Image 1 (cartoon, one colour):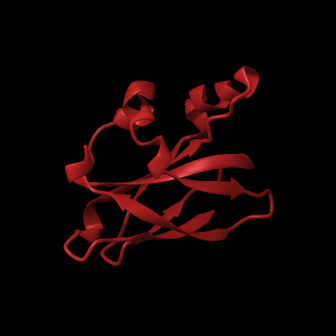
Image 2: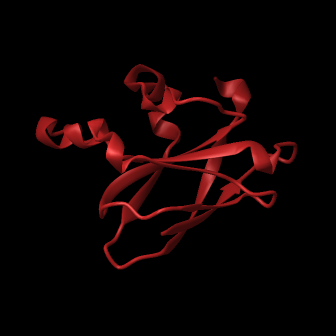
Length: 111
């Protein structure tokens, strides 16, 4: 399980942040297919303090995104996600269990 907190600008609303944990893109084409595995995607909405919990997934390299005022499943669209790839926080999910992570907010004005 991943426990996390969002690093926010002062005026952001904590309870409207959607976090998305996606398999990391890899340069090797055989490993790039992991991003296509939607069963590895995890999402959570933050609480009023900006904290979130993501359910377990398979060990491996992931990217964590925090979207302000985000609705729908646009993060599943490779063309949409490509614009924000550098804003994701790299996360290594270990087989041992829980970890804490902090992630920077992608503001609604950025989209």
